[in-house]
Image 1 (cartoon, rainbow, N blue to C red):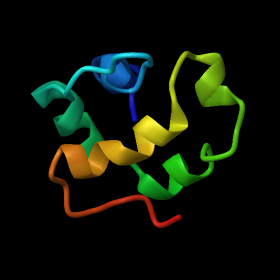
Image 2: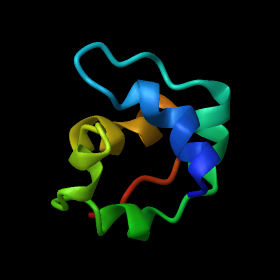
Image 3: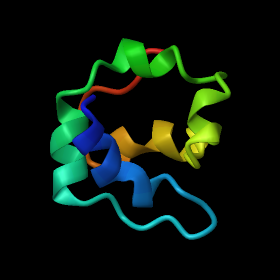
Length: 71
């Protein structure tokens, strides 16, 4: 996922009050490599960027995408 996609999605995965994912976020997520996202599931990288992994893994469903992380 390009940095612009991460930027578009960050408000939707940042606690304590995440916003709804924007159309730009969902569009970027629809092109994301879900297997790659799985590699960050238990990584300290996402939290170090202020991203809640649990919220991140809920994004595909919130965006009504048929593909979800296979992990």
